[in-house]
Amino acid sequence: MLKTVINYILGMGPSVFLPFIMIIIGLIVRMKFRRAFSAALTLGVAFAGMSVIINFMMSAIGPASQAFVKSTGLHLRAIDMGWTPLAAVAWAWPYAFFMFPIQIAINLIMLGFGWTNCLNVDMWNVWNKILTAVLVAGVTGSLPAAFIVGAIEVVFELKNADLTQKQIYKITGIPGIALPHAMGLTAVILAPLNRLLDFIPGLKNINIDAEKIREKIGIFGENHVMGFIIGFLIALFARYDVKGILTLAVQSATALTLFPMAAKLFMEALAPISDAAGEFMKRRFPGREFYIGLDWPFLAGQAEIWVTTIVLVPVILLAAIVLPGNNVLPFGGILNICFAAPALIITNKNLVRMFILGVITTPLYLYVATSFSPIITNLAKSVGTIKIPAGQLMTWNGMEAPGFRWIWAHAADVINGHFAGLVFLAIWGVIYVWYYRYMSRREKEVAKELGFDMTANPLSMP
Image 1 (cartoon, rainbow, N blue to C red):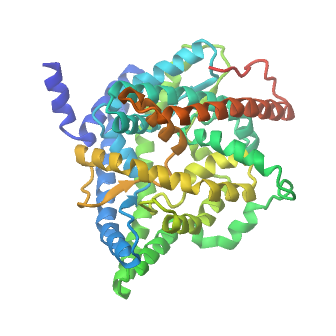
Image 2 (image 1 turned 90 degrees about the vertical axis):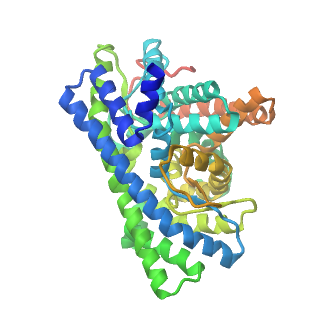
Image 3 (image 1 turned 60 degrees about the vertical axis):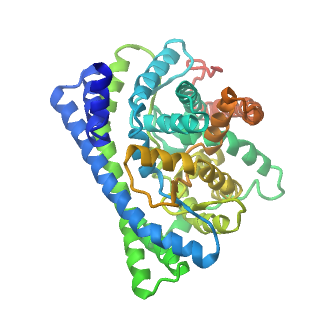
């Protein structure tokens, strides 16, 4: 009977059943029914609106990408849709809502035992753990493995928030805020690369003022202009006529303009639930000093993020063309914020280093996006969120923590007798231990510089 009810609710689609789940969560954390209902309904509107925009972009970019591939001789069948479509697909996964209690329980346990000082109230980004679980399930075929790796990601995100909190405060000036986000785990790869740059003569002392460069870029940093340029170039390479080129350029500008607007609806829907959940947990830890974990946009005021993402656009496009084995046509994730945000922290706003690290790691993003594109496409088709033409794939070039997700997904495949992933996991583990010690040292140095007492919240391995 219960299974029948659940299947009936899931069969309504994500724009109906997820708001239903959100109402339940809101009531659990003591929200008034009218506030919980309003937030949940806004979430349903966000899903419906996102589906319209996604399908609009797919219908516009799909034919152009196929023409582009045909005219250039390249085989780039996987369209980079950006993060918002993948979020919609992840939320539509039938088991998505189970990740909510997993994240909350792990956070409470780690707070209770003093293994973290971060109270993560960013309920929206539960979808990151859901996406990881989806990818692990796609590789291994195992739901238990999917949720285990998703839970492991929660732990590492919270620990990474501890490792970077004071450094983020130094950059932003915002007290009591931390970043327990999947994109932060990319720092495990970026930190040793950044350390190696210290040994290049002359580079260590080079730093460029991002504000001056942004002034030169001007209007080209706007989403709609960037979308127009990208659509124009894709149509040009596809050998469209003038009308076709301009039409696709405007359609691309429209998509990249509307995606953030739809994303704001998700934030608007989940912010009241996040606030209520935060207050709910605060009451259970009176007198305890901790940081509030938020989504990455509180870093968005840093000019270096936007300058880096814009300057890297031609690098990503060139890499997509020349890299052997790449199957990704960059578009929605062409502005790789998921790289720029952790790079901002690791380099301490050093724009030159951010660019160099971006060039080095661009192949990693493209290859991981290529590797996961069949899994993402199959999920999108199975949940019916997006209509994808035959022979075409969808993916995300700027995927958060691509190294973490690929390595852990393939390491989990040991349950099927595939052991190659364990080798990469062992290497990643060694790098993480170095990273942990390195970032702990940096965090203590910055805390001392800013006058904080680290003995009140000492860092400790999980």
